[in-house]
Length: 529
Image (cartoon, rainbow, N blue to C red; front, side, top):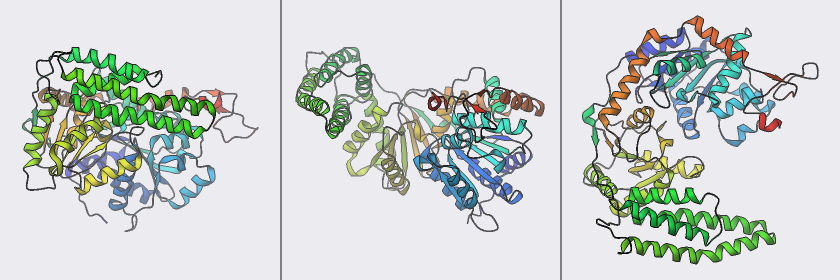
């Protein structure tokens, strides 16, 4: 059981959240989740017959936050029963399954998509059964997102129709998930949708500008000529297998890998990603057994030698006078600069507990960059790779994260999927290898650097400019004159309830013939039609 004491700013946030619906806006690493656990304790004690729903945006966050609740929450000196709501198992639950879950669990913690399905699409859960909703990373509560649907299509109608209003707690380090245009309007839009007001206490920043470094590197002056060659040869190589609908995307990813990392990484990406995908497709066709599929699999397989031959020509051309180059190297200068800073911060360190994260924009860079680091440093620095769902199996991603937390892996190359949620106290280096498009990415990426002597390296952005944008957002978050009033929040719930439309098809309703009312939304329309 945890005996963590709340710091003054956490006490402020908790008091505010007990009084009214609140969006806690604090930098990453300032204890937002601990505030949530204390509020969960309060509502489980005050409303013993009701449950708590804890929504997170991604699957990796489910286990982390569930474990945190089990350690740091207590009900009569015992940890609460936390039900993980994630994956296909819970997505296929029926009414009986949810009823059994509510009987045994105090806290339901899972992905917003599963909660949206249970509350809105299937209506297996009722808002009246819950005293508190915690929305983690609530800047994702926009548009037609699952979090937004829960607020708009379940909670707002419940409140307007006279139901006991549940408490809402939002957690975020950045209330805007996009550009900084019209910040006051975007703040009020989030407050309106979440029926809550932003609370952002003033605290000293954990990182100063001195913790940031802008890395200088030299671009390839012959890149345009090389891109032309890559375009021609990769298209021809793919054509040797069969026509590919998204050949432009394949070429674009190859160009990106070459531009960022160099020739060696390009061919690693082609062989280990593109060719591997083709081989996987061949196996799938062979498993179908019918003559047409088997014949297509055979034609694709017979074209692989020609594909590799075409790529060999490209490799030779990139190194030869066929494409004149003033500064040809196997690795890009940008990659060389990354190796230098990793060597400075890890290569000579006598303490092996230090860890680092290298963020890249495109998943195409993840595996090639991790391989380059492992090949260059050998046993001195072990590098892993983490990408989002669809690009990496969940078991592999969890294994990589576990090894990183234990220190078996010193560095992770990751996409933005790792910006939200991983907590590693010894993370001493964060490198933004790709361009940062939003202030949210700057805030959350920097927040991964938890070590007291942490350093943040930017390859494409100016740290000073990004810090100014962060301050601009914080100023708007702290401006109490922009807060929506209670009357305005009530009006928001009425407007959201009025937007719920009915349809003769009784989908999603547990009503009978006596009450043939149904709802159409972006989430159930595919199943209806």
